[in-house]
Length: 577
Image (cartoon, rainbow, N blue to C red):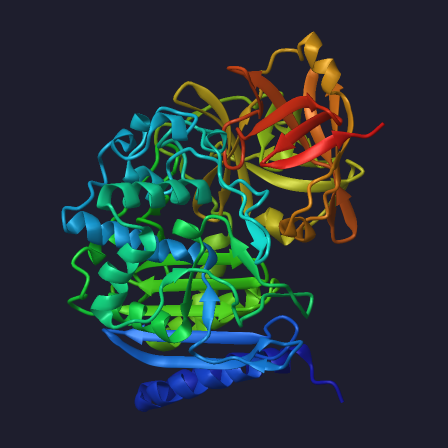
């Protein structure tokens, strides 16, 4: 017999009421259940395809309350995971780099606001070092490209691929956007070494590890026992090129000790407070960062300010959260490329337990926050304007044409309609074949708005109550006659471990309506997306057009003894005959 939907709904409403009543009457039950439930959840989730091994850390007020380790360091060899094995921290290495910079600044060894020309020679970068400071690099507002992808990871027996001066250039004006950059942190590592007169690994040992009696917080060296996994299979051990600042590793036990120290009422690091000081960019629309972490003013009752580090390394995912008003830190590491959902679920669960949050209330608050509000305020300094004919976005060229009281837009070959609201924002709808409306949940949360800021035309996007810069209007001149030599199909000839995570092997340079573009095919579930990225010539460099996240990166066209080639982010492509 199948119960009626009404009866099921009634019982689903009763359960949380009954549970909350018990916790009000017997609050000690919540504390007892916390550690037990966390360990049980970790053990239940570990060992499978999406989470071979899991580490969960909960630290509070200077102490490690929970260190749960379960599953496999290497699933194919059935090698068990332990708290002593060192994890590659990926982007979460910025916690250690930023903390070191904060500690050295507190000691007067480095100056966060001094121009980089004091620590970086102009010949080492393709911009004037005096334009940036160490604070700009660490707070994600440098304007440098996100990363040089080719050679980012190598096999243990492969020679390292060094970063060249031409890799360090400004893709965006300094302090305009918040955009994390591995290149910025590699440069920050150099600046710290030059200013302090010691190798970065030695500075980390002296100023961070030894004061707490921690073990190894240092660059990754082979062999690592913890294997990254993709689609259930262990990947070969890789080493990062940017070891100085972005390729650090730590054991679960040492990471737990570091997080505990940072949650103490009086942290042993005098500069710890600098790590979480908020910084903004001109077009950040309220987004704030510390010296590494993203800073969020949570709307979930009882949560307060959050600082977060997200981490992705080949086959390994992670997340570190600090509830700054409660002296609580949570970290979750999973050694699988597909482990993002496990990381998010377990870190949210641990924070719920630590702060006494009701998971249902937290989920509802998130749902409300992500829903497009009935009235969305305009960002300060933004002026309303009519849509441009075309915009460059991280998803490719977005072509626009007027339609009724809104406009139609095409991206990836899909056509969307944007309907004007009274507050000046536009709601987005997808129409199959441009006619039949089809509902997508994500589109119900997104708003768009053409706007003028600082004299430039941009396309803004709002997801829930947060505003982002989606892209900029394209007013590029017609492609010069010399550009026609670039037209045609090109295939990737580089051999690189990172390429296995991408399925892009060919690209095409095309000219349409006088606009030169780079087009490639990107498999996406049941579709093949075909982003079209406009490219322009500027100051002697070919570059991806536009202002916004992931835009402005350079391309280099040339000829050698093997024929025509072009390079993008270090990957080389050759012309298809």
